[in-house]
Image (cartoon, rainbow, N blue to C red; front, side, top):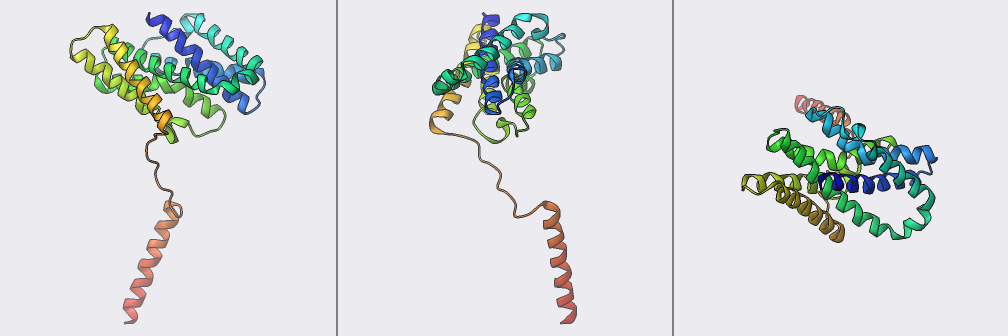
Length: 225
């Protein structure tokens, strides 16, 4: 079951990554690169961090084949898929829930603590998207928009809580995936996101210079008095 869920999440994220390549009108190689990076990037980062090497995506070629298939599908059918982007986003939310749950489960299996499990849930769910955005020179979406990584972290917390309450591994997986999915869909429907930091009127160094100049002027005025 866990394997099938992982394959499903990989295929969904691969399609999402390939569409970012379409946005920038990349060639077919670029489409496949973003498809693979998004589909298996988060899982590879997670496996390396917890010491599961070689990563699952490199042990089983099914993951890479799924990503390549998803990339080719988007390359050939992008014009037909784009008008149904809402379905793609729904599938992406499902993939987020699945990956958050798998990340939490694998971290728990390797004996990580509460924080570690939450981190692996978020990294598994968002790591591929971060790599994708960096490759096309964008600020990663998880750092500036959407209730995305936060939903995965809360899902990881639910996995830990269910474990502490004595529920089985299946229930822990289900609770993590359901919580992440519910939060993500709610955020999509009501356009919920975390508050952004307000931009400064100038750079910190310039503001520091202005403060020092203001102090010097104040001293001069006091000296004249």
